[in-house]
Length: 299
Image 1: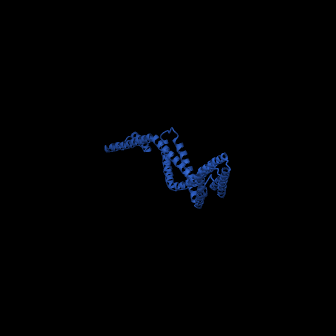
Image 2: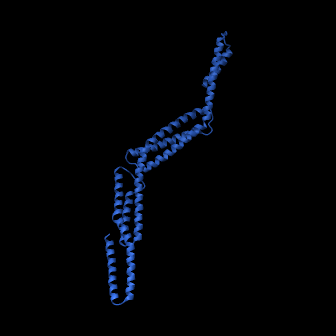
Image 3: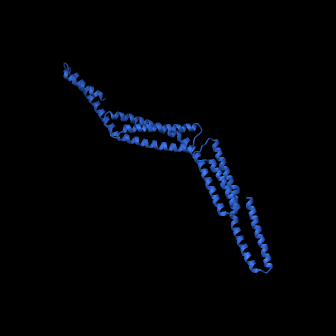
């Protein structure tokens, strides 16, 4: 900023010298040259009057506001590092160094009164600061999300895993009596494998958190991916259950019919026993036992 003050002092001194020259020309009676020089001075003073507010505004930003903001960002970053925050795919320290370099460049432009360039550089510094602040804020918000969402996702794993196990048992049972045309057993097996793989990914994320070396934004993205896929799996499980619902209902009806037949057969035998017939024919006994065996096999 010293260079800027020197520049302004030299600029004003130059104008003062021009005024002295005007006095001399006027005293010498050179009114034409006096008028020309006065017009030039008036123009320069107007230009300076227009530039001074912009110079003052830029000077205040570059001398106080921006350096303080850059320092606060650097302090915030160091504070997050002390709390074991990690940053991936971005070097925050380099971004902060570039920020300081941009502030220095703007100062040099201001020393040369390149106001358009100065103002563009200040806008660029502000944009860069917002980008860094967003990176830091994203990690802070991601940590809160991960901590809050961890338990919910763990419970979702348990729910979907249990549902898939029950579904697989049901499909295997139904497959003994019906032909499943959509390869549901194989699909359920694939789903089970996928759930196991996602659970491994989830457990690895938890380990990174416990080791205090997590990139929370990456874990958040992983949690959201897993959550979305588990929701899709849960929906697919319900679709398969609805598809085979008719088969299970038919099995229940058939089971009920077998039970009723078994009951009727026993009632028939008790009726015959009440008649105290001298003995059942061997053929009747043979058929009775055959039918009873078939019924009990399907109970």
